[in-house]
Amino acid sequence: MRTTIRLPDGLLEEAKRHAFETGRTLTALIEDALREALGRRRSETTRHPVRLTTFRGGGLQRGVDLDDSASLRDHMNGADASM
Image 1 (cartoon, rainbow, N blue to C red):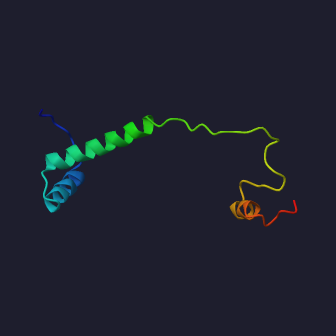
Image 2 (image 1 turned 90 degrees about the vertical axis):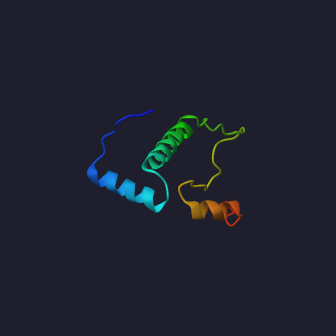
């Protein structure tokens, strides 16, 4: 199918140069770019929400700070078992 698109001069020249350097036609370059952009959009919209398994309990253990990764690592390694 034929269509007309309007591109800024600089972008068109850069696209032509890239197509030439990669041994493709301008049409092939534009097709690939569109497929990639549409594929990214498709993968973003088809993501399923993550369902976390939870267990009974009173929430976080005493002394656990989820915003402090070093402290959390130490806690998981038993460095602060006294808490």
